[in-house]
Length: 316
Image 1 (cartoon, rainbow, N blue to C red):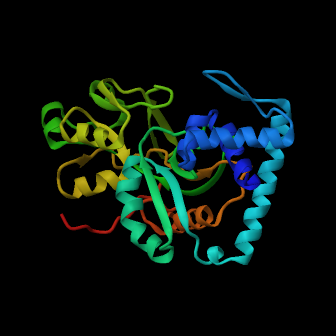
Image 2 (cartoon, rainbow, N blue to C red; image 1 turned 180 degrees about the vertical axis):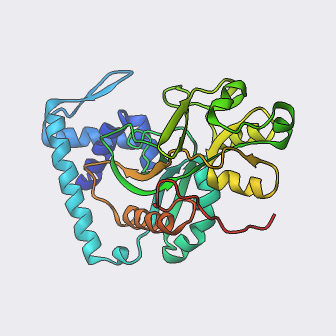
């Protein structure tokens, strides 16, 4: 039995809450995972996990052993990296999750630079507006916009998202143009709801110290940024979406910006990763690269709260 591999498998089973998910995350047969755990328990003469047909839980001895395994494997990886070329040229599979629009419009166009720097990293980029469970789903790190709900994750703020309020020319021709946030009570909006909680987000507007928060009337709510923008283009109502998505549509004349002298609160962007883990070279370089990329991108860089991003002209 490879003791270090067995310890790694044990950690994965505990984090994932079961053998099947751990096997999928490690790309190992489930039988191999089960055999390694059994061999580990036999060598220690102690039961590490309680197993039923539906659930796997850790024993008190297993919990103590788990913490020691985390520290041991962290020390092993750090020692290996300090003596190998991986510090300069990290390699291997890197699993990252990011919101759909942020990935397609900002991250992916910049990835040629990342791969030019780190050609030996194989990136698996999950794109969804649904917040994934990093530990349960075996994700190394994630890029997230908005306030963080899970305080058990390590987070690094790398930028912020700015918003615009817009509507299609067809919608405004039919319903008129609001000139004050309070006018929106007579309009139809397209709402956005949390994929995690189901809660619909309110809209906010600030100008010269005055702040207005509105729960928009709506016939439709969505939880995907691309679908949300499509609803606005279809004339289903007024929308409030990120500047980097709406500014190109505004330049094309497909959307018209409303209430330009009012500002909406920006949302922070964080890179997050699980705690109690040695930050491997591949995760570390990705986090640093994302932080550097967002810090210089006009759509996401941290600046005055009410500063309007100046995006470069793009070809239609």
